[in-house]
Every structure is written in C-alpha cells, then in structure tokens.
Image (cartoon, rainbow, N blue to C red; front, side, top):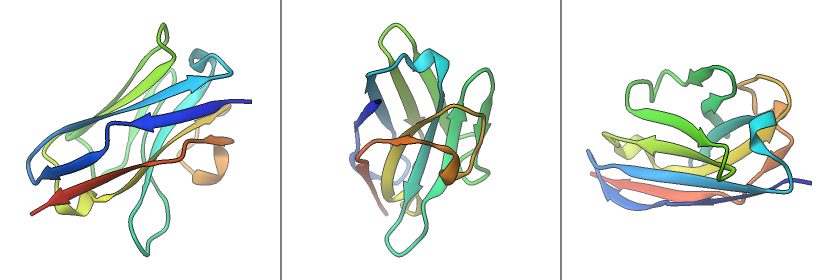
Length: 119
C-alpha cells in the first residue's frame, strides 16, 4: 500500500509561484511513475505532469510548471511559475506502475491540495 500526502498549496496572485510536494510512504517512488493531476470545480480531473525515466506535461502548463523527484526523500515536486487564475484547482499526486497520462492508469492518489490563483 502506498500513501501519498500533498502539501504546498495556497492562495497566490496571478504571476506568482508555488511549489507542491508529494511525500510517499509504503513504497519507494523510484520504481513508480509519478503524476500530478488537477480538478477545478465542475470539471473533470485532468493531467498536469508526469515523471519516470521521461517527462510529460500538459500543453496548458508547458513552460510554466516543472515536475521533479527526490528519490532519497521519496518525494515528488511540482514547481508552478507564472500562475494564472485558470490554474485554480485541487492538485493531486498519483503513483502508477506504467507510463501514462490518463487518470485511470494511476493506482494510488493523495488527498489533494488546493491552489487558488487570484487575478
């Protein structure tokens, strides 16, 4: 069993930055595909970024967000720069066994952390 705990969300003005963290326990993240997803009110959960032996980013955040991992700390990060009001959502960390950007491919999920970007 894998437990994922996100942190680092909050309220920020447009143009600002936040760094989200996802701390894992129960399994070594270095063997997992790690993803960040987000869900805005009234919308479906959507892919943001993933990391394994490669990286992937959603077009909407490419060039502004960066995913990274620290295997020694069993933690994955999402650095978010140049934030926009449309980035407002609950951000979720997820772990899976196979490379994918689909929500359904990930087996383990954190509880989410709220990111609110004011205009």
